[in-house]
Length: 196
Image (cartoon, one colour):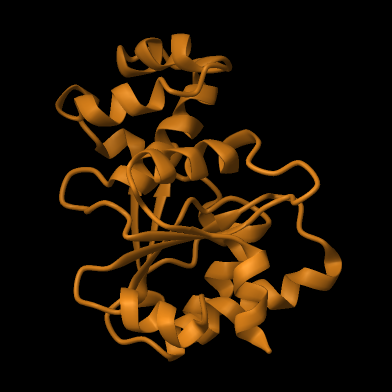
Protein backbone atom coordinates (compact mmCIF):
# COMPACT_ATOMS: atom_id res chain seq x y z
CA UNK A 1 0.00 0.00 0.00
CA UNK A 2 1.28 3.43 -0.93
CA UNK A 3 1.17 6.36 1.51
CA UNK A 4 -1.53 8.18 -0.49
CA UNK A 5 -3.70 5.06 -0.40
CA UNK A 6 -3.18 4.68 3.36
CA UNK A 7 -4.19 8.30 3.95
CA UNK A 8 -7.23 8.03 1.69
CA UNK A 9 -8.39 4.87 3.45
CA UNK A 10 -7.71 5.82 7.07
CA UNK A 11 -7.87 9.62 7.42
CA UNK A 12 -11.44 9.97 8.67
CA UNK A 13 -13.08 11.26 11.84
CA UNK A 14 -12.69 8.68 14.61
CA UNK A 15 -9.81 6.80 12.98
CA UNK A 16 -7.24 5.50 15.46
CA UNK A 17 -3.89 4.29 14.17
CA UNK A 18 -1.53 2.32 16.41
CA UNK A 19 2.10 3.43 16.09
CA UNK A 20 4.30 1.00 17.97
CA UNK A 21 6.69 -1.89 17.98
CA UNK A 22 9.84 -3.37 19.40
CA UNK A 23 11.89 -1.81 22.16
CA UNK A 24 15.11 -2.50 20.29
CA UNK A 25 15.33 -0.35 17.17
CA UNK A 26 18.27 -0.53 14.77
CA UNK A 27 20.31 2.66 14.93
CA UNK A 28 19.81 3.23 11.20
CA UNK A 29 16.02 3.04 11.66
CA UNK A 30 15.46 5.39 14.61
CA UNK A 31 15.12 8.55 12.53
CA UNK A 32 12.80 6.71 10.13
CA UNK A 33 10.33 6.05 12.96
CA UNK A 34 10.41 9.71 13.99
CA UNK A 35 10.00 10.75 10.36
CA UNK A 36 7.00 8.46 9.86
CA UNK A 37 5.22 9.79 12.95
CA UNK A 38 5.72 13.35 11.73
CA UNK A 39 4.81 12.50 8.13
CA UNK A 40 1.53 10.87 9.11
CA UNK A 41 0.57 13.65 11.54
CA UNK A 42 1.44 16.39 9.05
CA UNK A 43 -0.39 14.81 6.11
CA UNK A 44 -3.61 13.78 7.80
CA UNK A 45 -6.36 15.76 9.47
CA UNK A 46 -8.49 13.33 11.44
CA UNK A 47 -6.36 10.41 12.60
CA UNK A 48 -5.63 9.99 16.29
CA UNK A 49 -2.44 8.04 16.93
CA UNK A 50 -2.17 5.57 19.83
CA UNK A 51 0.86 4.18 21.61
CA UNK A 52 1.79 2.20 24.70
CA UNK A 53 4.54 4.60 25.79
CA UNK A 54 7.22 1.89 25.73
CA UNK A 55 10.85 2.66 25.05
CA UNK A 56 12.10 2.11 21.51
CA UNK A 57 9.62 2.15 18.62
CA UNK A 58 6.71 3.63 20.59
CA UNK A 59 8.91 6.47 21.78
CA UNK A 60 10.35 7.28 18.33
CA UNK A 61 6.98 7.19 16.55
CA UNK A 62 5.48 9.39 19.30
CA UNK A 63 8.33 11.88 19.04
CA UNK A 64 7.46 12.38 15.39
CA UNK A 65 3.72 12.83 16.01
CA UNK A 66 4.18 15.33 18.85
CA UNK A 67 6.69 17.35 16.87
CA UNK A 68 3.64 18.21 14.78
CA UNK A 69 0.72 18.00 17.26
CA UNK A 70 0.70 16.22 20.63
CA UNK A 71 -3.10 16.53 20.91
CA UNK A 72 -3.38 13.78 18.30
CA UNK A 73 -1.47 11.25 20.39
CA UNK A 74 -3.14 8.92 22.90
CA UNK A 75 -1.16 6.69 25.22
CA UNK A 76 -2.45 3.70 27.16
CA UNK A 77 -0.14 2.70 29.99
CA UNK A 78 -0.06 -0.41 32.21
CA UNK A 79 -0.16 1.66 35.40
CA UNK A 80 -0.22 5.27 36.57
CA UNK A 81 3.11 7.04 36.18
CA UNK A 82 4.53 4.54 33.66
CA UNK A 83 7.49 6.31 31.99
CA UNK A 84 5.87 9.61 32.95
CA UNK A 85 8.85 11.76 31.94
CA UNK A 86 8.90 10.21 28.46
CA UNK A 87 5.14 10.44 27.93
CA UNK A 88 4.61 13.05 25.22
CA UNK A 89 0.90 12.38 24.61
CA UNK A 90 -1.90 14.86 24.75
CA UNK A 91 -4.08 12.18 26.36
CA UNK A 92 -3.14 9.30 28.64
CA UNK A 93 -5.24 6.46 30.01
CA UNK A 94 -3.77 3.95 32.44
CA UNK A 95 -5.14 0.56 33.43
CA UNK A 96 -5.75 1.79 36.98
CA UNK A 97 -8.48 4.04 35.52
CA UNK A 98 -10.25 1.19 33.72
CA UNK A 99 -12.92 -0.80 35.58
CA UNK A 100 -11.80 -4.21 34.32
CA UNK A 101 -15.01 -5.89 35.49
CA UNK A 102 -16.88 -3.80 32.91
CA UNK A 103 -14.38 -4.69 30.18
CA UNK A 104 -15.07 -8.41 29.75
CA UNK A 105 -14.05 -8.47 26.06
CA UNK A 106 -10.75 -6.81 26.92
CA UNK A 107 -10.03 -9.33 29.68
CA UNK A 108 -11.08 -12.26 27.47
CA UNK A 109 -8.90 -11.10 24.56
CA UNK A 110 -5.88 -10.56 26.84
CA UNK A 111 -6.06 -14.24 27.78
CA UNK A 112 -5.18 -15.15 24.17
CA UNK A 113 -1.56 -14.67 25.20
CA UNK A 114 -0.65 -18.09 26.64
CA UNK A 115 2.34 -16.82 28.64
CA UNK A 116 0.20 -14.54 30.80
CA UNK A 117 -3.32 -15.99 30.54
CA UNK A 118 -3.29 -17.30 34.09
CA UNK A 119 -2.08 -13.97 35.49
CA UNK A 120 -4.81 -11.86 33.89
CA UNK A 121 -7.52 -12.99 36.31
CA UNK A 122 -5.22 -12.33 39.28
CA UNK A 123 -4.47 -8.82 38.02
CA UNK A 124 -8.15 -8.11 37.36
CA UNK A 125 -8.96 -9.37 40.88
CA UNK A 126 -6.63 -6.71 42.27
CA UNK A 127 -3.52 -8.75 42.98
CA UNK A 128 -0.55 -6.54 42.16
CA UNK A 129 2.91 -8.09 42.32
CA UNK A 130 5.98 -8.73 40.14
CA UNK A 131 4.18 -11.57 38.34
CA UNK A 132 0.84 -9.93 37.67
CA UNK A 133 2.55 -6.83 36.27
CA UNK A 134 3.27 -9.01 33.20
CA UNK A 135 -0.50 -9.29 32.75
CA UNK A 136 -0.80 -5.50 33.03
CA UNK A 137 1.42 -5.07 29.97
CA UNK A 138 -0.62 -7.58 27.96
CA UNK A 139 -3.87 -5.93 29.08
CA UNK A 140 -2.40 -2.58 28.03
CA UNK A 141 -1.51 -3.98 24.60
CA UNK A 142 -5.00 -5.45 24.29
CA UNK A 143 -6.64 -2.15 25.29
CA UNK A 144 -4.65 -0.36 22.58
CA UNK A 145 -6.28 -2.61 20.00
CA UNK A 146 -9.83 -2.96 21.34
CA UNK A 147 -10.14 0.40 23.05
CA UNK A 148 -11.81 0.76 26.42
CA UNK A 149 -14.29 3.09 28.03
CA UNK A 150 -14.75 6.10 25.76
CA UNK A 151 -11.63 5.24 23.76
CA UNK A 152 -12.62 3.38 20.59
CA UNK A 153 -10.88 0.47 18.92
CA UNK A 154 -7.93 0.81 16.58
CA UNK A 155 -8.63 1.26 12.89
CA UNK A 156 -5.19 0.03 11.75
CA UNK A 157 -1.77 -0.74 13.20
CA UNK A 158 1.58 0.51 11.95
CA UNK A 159 4.42 -1.46 13.52
CA UNK A 160 8.18 -1.64 13.72
CA UNK A 161 8.86 -5.35 14.13
CA UNK A 162 11.96 -7.52 14.46
CA UNK A 163 11.92 -9.04 10.99
CA UNK A 164 14.43 -11.73 12.03
CA UNK A 165 11.99 -12.93 14.72
CA UNK A 166 8.67 -11.46 13.60
CA UNK A 167 5.52 -11.12 15.64
CA UNK A 168 7.00 -12.17 18.96
CA UNK A 169 6.55 -10.77 22.48
CA UNK A 170 4.13 -7.96 23.23
CA UNK A 171 4.36 -6.61 19.69
CA UNK A 172 3.45 -10.04 18.38
CA UNK A 173 0.48 -10.20 20.76
CA UNK A 174 -0.73 -6.82 19.53
CA UNK A 175 -0.33 -7.77 15.86
CA UNK A 176 -2.13 -11.09 16.43
CA UNK A 177 -5.03 -9.30 18.12
CA UNK A 178 -5.27 -6.83 15.24
CA UNK A 179 -5.48 -9.69 12.77
CA UNK A 180 -8.01 -11.58 14.93
CA UNK A 181 -10.29 -8.53 14.99
CA UNK A 182 -9.82 -7.70 11.29
CA UNK A 183 -7.67 -4.61 11.89
CA UNK A 184 -5.17 -4.04 9.06
CA UNK A 185 -1.49 -4.29 9.99
CA UNK A 186 1.50 -2.65 8.30
CA UNK A 187 5.14 -3.20 9.23
CA UNK A 188 8.29 -1.47 8.04
CA UNK A 189 8.40 -3.58 4.87
CA UNK A 190 5.45 -1.43 3.79
CA UNK A 191 5.97 1.93 5.46
CA UNK A 192 9.72 2.34 4.80
CA UNK A 193 8.60 2.90 1.20
CA UNK A 194 6.46 5.84 2.34
CA UNK A 195 9.58 7.72 3.39
CA UNK A 196 11.20 7.69 -0.06
